[in-house]
Length: 278
Length: 262
Image (cartoon, chains in turn yellow, purple):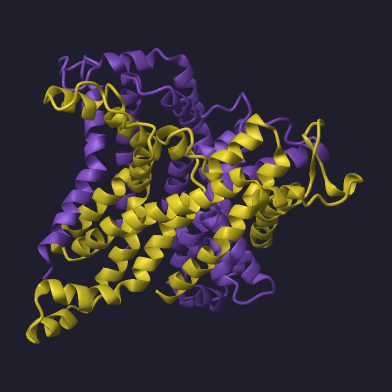
């Protein structure tokens, strides 16, 4: 029983984590064809196929998809940080309200992100809350298009990922020494200056971790661009879905996955270093 | 000693997180589908929901998949966390740790695609799993969930030193007895919290399920996703309200479990 428990993790991880990732690499170097499944592997006679990965570099459509994903992910992470930094600090210093406030930030995280995206659809669509309100106030003649825009997509992403960003800032802020700020105040710093020059610099590693904690999953996001973004927001997650399900081009989908991983490997390693340091 | 704008940002952030959800819930109880036109308190959308068999079927499937995936995740993630925390340095430990944490940092689309490729390749080689459906979704969710369980269990065990286990062994307990009477109870709260986390993750997942489910494996989030693609209906609001309630209850139970642990 104990022996089985010891061997189980290795076997499970080899089969369901390592082997699948290896397969993605293989498929990225395979040939698309008409068979079922719709690819022929390198050992079926045609050898390795470098064309899929080269396509990503040469075809502006795929290059833009990768670039646009990184831009949107960075924008999402920056906006999350802008809110999460003060939120995490304020919650850490909220005294007996701390638990409740933290719960209020985390509960939406547990409510399922589809529901939260649905709420934004209800707010932003033509017959939605915002357009109804604007029309009711006589500010607009007809509905202004809010849904299916870059702005809607960004708002949805920030809403979905904000709780992730608050947690590391909160955790670091609870460990700060309040005496340092006190010293700054005694030496004549205003609270604002003490905050910017004493508190904030101590939180830099946590802020970096919060940024990456949002950036890494946001780069591969599929659902939010699909439900809130414009049709031309062709982020890599969306293109991957399209290649795989509509075009049935498994090798190009595999190549996209490999490219996304290569782009994220640096941020992932950096994130784990920051985690270990904290 | 925090500047006013820091406190203001907290309230702005909370309003940003909660207002859309609050409007959605309020709207689910209004008889009129037009915002700001309160059609009186009504449960008609809940009634309509109860009559939507396709959704109910998806919900029932999701609950079963989530329950199964969470249980499997607890078994596998628990074993992984235990091996990583209690087996000292051994050959391949770093690799095992990396693989165990990989699903936490990999983009969902990559995990989903990779698991689908595995299931397709396995079917080609061995004939199992025949086609894709609830079982393959369950395995995918268990893989993701077990990564979370492993982290929770490992940190829980790492924070307790081995004195108790060693004392039991000194007093003549077999390793199996020591494991069953000491280690397992030590792990229990983290296993329970991990089960709930894996359960929630499974109930919330669209991407892994889209990749690994066939036509027979439409889970609730996948059904909800295709409904949202066509726009919101008050029925979706009602469903969201019910899910919100379930999530609140889950979080409450988890809070109690984590409180008991200390």
